[in-house]
Length: 330
Length: 254
Image (cartoon, each protein chain N blue to C red):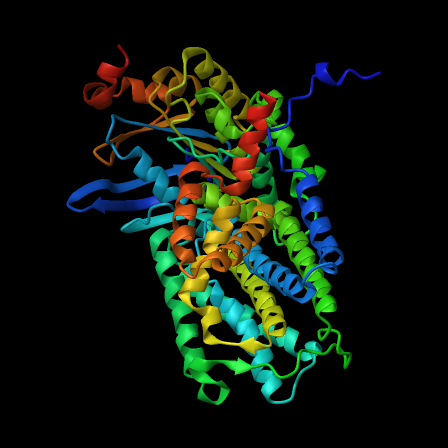
């Protein structure tokens, strides 16, 4: 028998209790089971609510990639959701409904927007980065609002959900649910792989100490730009799904309030954890749904709730859970 | 008889830098020959770190030229100079505190290997990165501490980590900005031993206040005062230079 406690190799770095696979597996199993539970009660309502949660979780994951691993606090991330959604809406209004066209277009447009704006944004830091991403987000918002042929301020109804190679797989609510779950899982795995890869290590290092990274030979700007484009495309994916789930596209999808909500989701759940972004999106949207069912002045309750989390749980819900578990175990 | 012509690894010509009205680097010319350890000494505020920062690219010179390996690098960015083999340590420790000690060094290996646009596969598990990194850690005596977060190292260990990061870059020239700053007596001795073992493998520029270390290690010494080179030569020559003794060494050697 090997005595593992007396090994001479140095101890691995201490990690959070939820850093393993247990939490993400639990999250995805839970999502997969929801439709079965929902058959007993208000199926359409539950499915559409949780579909919405998963779609925003995808966008929140992308934002966590920027904030949690790159310290790039983007206040304009909703723009990418809007771009993805408008790709579906505008193509649909011209009779192009197939996802084989609209999905690559949605990803391409949001990727290009991220590239063009990232080249400028990433030359700034800190508060200036926040302000300039906000500015670009608002630019996208006002551009969408002025698209008179496509509904302008009022938005645009998506008359027909996307098909895939002619098959109407997005039409069934349950099928759409599992498509969203599949994309959420893919987005999660991509982000996770990215963070641990050689690329991710340079990208994370750039947050930690840019001066050191430059002096060992990394031009960190290039790495941040690539991460920004990837995060933008994942945001676009979220928009593509949102347009299909709501059958509607509106400039409100890219408003700065929406960008702020995404930030809250990520911070609420716990930044730099990926799982936290999913939990944050779920917690935000479900709390919002629950409170708005109680009173129309639900924001009066929701606001202080966010303050409480920010003050008493600096690591978000995930950080809070970790601390509680440590307290219980002593 | 003329000296044999040796192409210097680094040649600085007429380097000048002003901070506002203050001239911090004043027409500095010096060269570093292959394999030599060239120390730069001088009192506080003499402009030693400013000089190192201009060589490594953190600061741009106002005038003058920096030739590295026969190439004019005066206008290259920090990362481009690092790619060409210019490594440095910082006077104020500059590491990635939340990365493990091993990862700090493995990143330098990764930079040298030049393949960082890989999006899949865990970098932390790559033997091709970890093995050279462990070797570098071993040389500075940090192998046993490889897995702890770098931020938890003692000050002296952090200084050694800086050195390991530089070693992992397999530099063509190593700039050491006060590697002994703030270390205890034992740690200083250990670092001197490490530096001595590295001598000859690649040329080094050493900025240091510890005169014991400088005179034990340096092949040549340049004395910098008010941004100007006052004297340059072998340790014996510099020690005997009356100008240097009056201006600087007189107090330091006591």
